[in-house]
Amino acid sequence: MSAASAAILGCLGTELTAREAAFFREAAPWGFILFARNVDNPGQLRRLTGALRDTVGRDAPIFVDQEGGREQRLRPPYWRDWPAPLDQAEAAGPQAARAMELRYRIIASELREAGIDGNCIPTADIAGPDTHPFLLNRCLGRDAGTVIEAARGAARGSLAGGVLPVVKHIPGHGRATADSHLELPRVTASPAELAATDFAVFRALADLPLGMTAHVVYTGIDPDRPATLSPVAVGAIRREMGFGGLLMTDDLSMKALDGRLSDLTRAALAAGCDIALHCNGEEAEMAEVVAAAGALSPEATARAEAALGWRQAPDAADIPALEAELAALAGGGHG
Image (tube, rainbow, N blue to C red):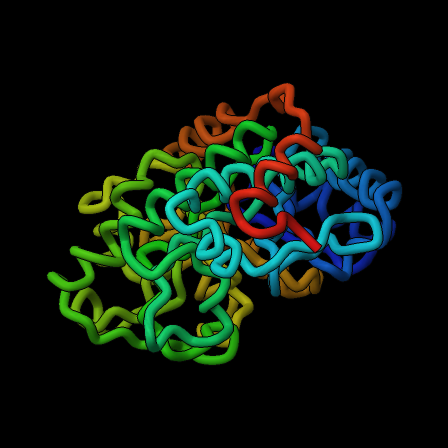
């Protein structure tokens, strides 16, 4: 078994082709990420997650975006349908932290059953008056204190269910007025203002095992490069915010980033990210990312091992009772 490459990769469909399996066997990504294109029914999904791990010969982490609302890859009729996170958190009011803990503990039960042990939550960006609609109701609150407590609850529930949380989008996407899937946002708030708000959230969550960067330029931090590619921004994430976990990029194939994937991968890792995330499952693009990423660095390996050390068997939980509690707190649990 070869050393894991500094990459998390996607696949194209609901089953691995022989060609994909051979590629992953050679590429040896550290982990995988799934999307709606990969999800049909519970049995199929369990087979797919098992096949992905078989290709690399280890219990590789498998991630998904199962926030609820717009971002949920597992949907009815086999899985619960969830309201947008901000809607449910605000419905719970002062009990938002408990509501998010219950919500993501229940979601974790479904993910673990499918063989998924990583969820790209909590979205710890602060919702503001100018937050782009693509992100707004995916947030957990409208001020730093509320977001910190709700995000902490979300992470606690996910971990209790045996699913690793990935806090995002470090160091904060809430002030961005553009959709980073389509273009590069620029945030002009001063460093002092950012430190007191957006960055304060991630400082308070810095002990979590995994994080994801933002494809956002913060002109007061680094006017030329988005955080994902900026040694200055990643340095602030590590030192000023104190984040010591495994730091993955947001998807390098998003249109916010311009340039060859090989160059973007090298720039992100040189900036201080530990691992490159590539999501669309296109083999030629993945090959380019893997070749540029190389093996996990010794520092990244240590952080990756520490992150996986947070994986645990799900606690004993009465899921129907948790659903009833959530419904009482937030005016209904799920659809």
